[in-house]
Image (cartoon, rainbow, N blue to C red; front, side, top):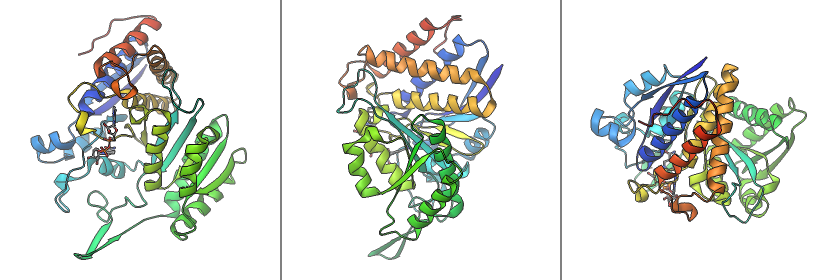
Length: 368
Ligand code: NAD
């Protein structure tokens, strides 16, 4: 019996709404597989945690998360932090660094029932998640920006051989397991010759150990153009932190929007499921956010739990969730971002209906 302890962090803005639907879906798959059990532990992060516990990332949350097998993290609002105050840390970035979640896996694919200019996109951005422009001097809080005087800002960018090699290994491993077996390295070596040079050369060295994977590389500006003009050609895209952050919003746009853009923050020993998008504060508390991205992030988490634990049941559960999303979208049940009329919870209910209806045995589902 596979039993997994999951930390559930709702986050800010639309976070509580979309994480609630994600939990509903997780409970639904648990109810249809006899040998799959989850213990869900809600842990405070974000503005609510700050108001209640005096910190956007309470130490107790970190401590408890360390006892979990994985976590589901909602989006977090970045507010104007008090400079260098660890109580107002950017919890999202801090969790990535504290758990050394160095790989941010952000897939984009076309979905049935969602009209776009493209019919067959299936790519994955593999973004370095702890270095680059988002590295910070205090490691856990703050960022890599310095003001030597009030009219000047210096920004630090960190690229290491170790960081470049390990993200490349994750990307190439993924490419090797996919049908196309194709990886593109994206950089800006023509200007940032040292940092991007180290990144690309490290990646190319690692690529020599993956002879079946075809490799090429692009300057990030030209690559943005290629992505818009011929996204269907690409497979796995390996890149540095900020380039990956920007390009993954672009690829989300190509397949229907941020509401369909999942993500996984992955390390060697831990992972956090987290949608690509932010807390979308202007649509919060209206019941109109699309929970698909967060739900599909949890689906990715199940896939990785399956690999990590050599347990095929979470993989089956992941496939069921993916089928449910495809089925519900194809039926035209969509949230307003996709020109639909379903509320966040109606969309989640439709997924649950598919999940418990299509699989046997049905053991009854509690949505509480
Ligand atoms: P955003 O991703 O929150 O929103 C961008 C646009 O996409 C908005 O129009 C929003 O309404 C829409 N959108 C996003 N997710 C959606 C969903 N699930 N369903 C329907 N529409 C959705 O980006 P932003 O507005 O630049 O940032 C808002 C806040 O989120 C900021 O404080 C930012 O710092 C933070 N942020 C957090 C993360 C994270 O926690 N990983 C990522 C990006 C931004």
